[in-house]
Length: 269
Image (cartoon, rainbow, N blue to C red; front, side):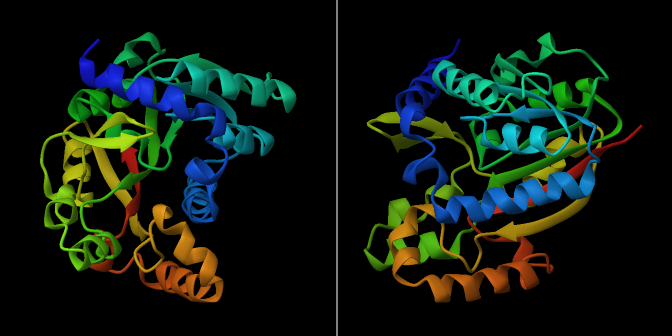
C-alpha cells in the first residue's frame, strides 16, 4: 500500500463518526448528492446491480436500495464501512446491500461483467491514485452497455478562485491547476486528491472503452460546500443560483466549470 493511500484512508477514518453532519452532508453537499442520485435513477432502472465507489457512511447506498436497487457498497476507510454496515442493518436493507472494505486498486476482487452500473458521489474518484487502471477495472466488471455516473471535483471553480484571489492567496487559488495528486487537509490529516477537467476525465475512460452520455456542472453558480456559512445567511439567493445551475449547467462551456461536474459514461460493447 502506498503512503498516499494510507494517508487518505486514515483521514477518512478520522471523520467517519461525524460525517453525516456539517462536514460530509451539509445543505450544499445535499444539493450535489440529490442531483447525482437523480442521474443514477434516470440512467439505471430499479432492480439493477450497482457498485458504489467510495460509499462513505452509506447514505447513497441506503437511498438506492430503498428504491429497489441492489448495491455493493465499497470504501477504503474501515470506519466508513463500519458506519455503512450499521446504517444498512438499522434500515433492514441487508438483502439489497453488500458492504465491502475495498480500495479502488482492489477491484480485481469483484466479478467480471456483473454490474449494470457504477456510481461515485462527491469527488470520491478524485482520490484514485491510478485513474487509467481504475477505468480498465470498471470496464471489466460492468456488463455491456453498463454505465458510470460520477460527480467529480473539477478544475475550474469560479467561486473558489475568486475567494482565494480576493485574499491574495494565489497559490491556493491555483491549486486545481496542478496535474499531479495534491495534499488536501482534512481533520489534521491529508487526503491526496487529483483534479480533472471533464474532458480529461472523459478521455481516460474513452481509452478503456467508454463513451460520453451526458455532462453538466454542479455548484457552478451555487457556492461550493465549504461555503455553507454564506448559504445559511442567504438561502433565497442560493435557491436562485441553484435554478441557474439546473438550467444552464449543461450548456457547452458552462458544463466544464463548477466545483463538481456530473458525468455519465457508457461502456461500449
